[in-house]
Amino acid sequence: MHIDYWCDLTSPWCYLGLRHLRQAVSTFAHADEVEITLHAFLLDPELVQSQAIPRRVHLIENLGLSLEEAQDLDARLITLGRAEGLALDLDHALIVPTSNAHRAIAAAADWDLELGETTGAHTYSVKLAEAIHRSHFEMGLDISDPDVLIGCAQDVGIEAQRIVLALASAEYASRVFSDFHIGAQMGIDLVPTYLIDRTFLVQDHQTVTGLGNVLNTAWAHSRKEL
Image: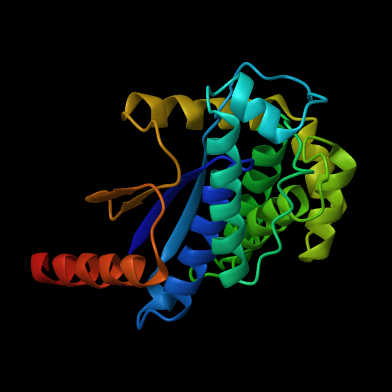
């Protein structure tokens, strides 16, 4: 089974989505036959440098939410995160570009391929994506900063040099933007988005139970075709 997962690393829904996906796959009876491929989605593809404004101001001024709506949204996210053991600090989450972070994840995915360890919920690419989410949402770090990304990589056991080379590589930059444009051409305009076996498309926030049901349905469907 193959899962294509589109995410933006500054979306709290994607942080929750990745946590739920890892949990669902970890408890899936055929976890060792599930491949997860992470794809870049850029909520603001024109953002090229970090902005010194609070996230809540961004929600109000750029996304059109009222103060009450922004406060209610953050309160809901914090509650959902707490239920998953995530200590979301949305007051200190920065407005930053994510292309560098996606390059780092692509490098981690290449290492997974080199190692021949591409299945399950504990690949280096998946672990790195979660570490980057954690740095952004729980530690208030700038995940466009190479030093932060290198630190995230080292935390999950990836050599710093792999990330250094990826961030300096035009090829990795091209891969990230190609990934984003392919998703846009497919009509993906909401993250997280899950495409399972290139057949079942699931968008937006899903519970662990919901994702587990999708995995079981997709598995039964693929076995029926065989």
